[in-house]
Length: 118
Image 1 (cartoon, rainbow, N blue to C red):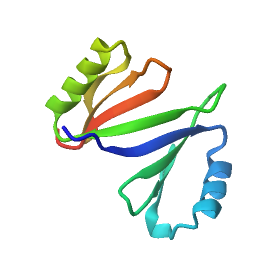
Image 2: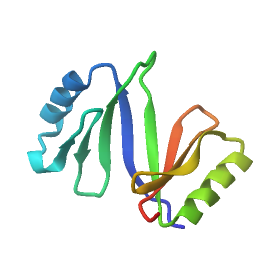
Image 3: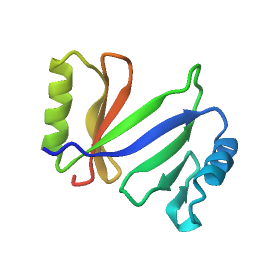
Image 4: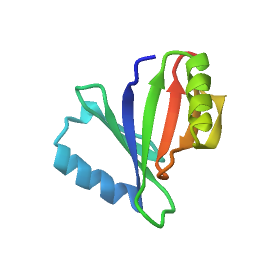
């Protein structure tokens, strides 16, 4: 498996305010922005996206997303993370058209492992 981080999710207090801020900072054309009811994604040419997700947060947090090529690869990476001491936050499962799980690393950062091939 080749590691490939495809997105970084930033939790924000106010999605509308954060959207306007990052839209002004990144100055991306509208075609590179996806606006949904619970998140906004900015897509960059290098194949990485920054996702803003509104939530009840005490401190700012990040979620790194590792893209896998298969459900088996998701399971393997989650298992290796658990064996290395990570806490499994979400056991891998199929949701919509993805298969994903999430772990928290030793320093508290969240990592989502996702496959679009379910």
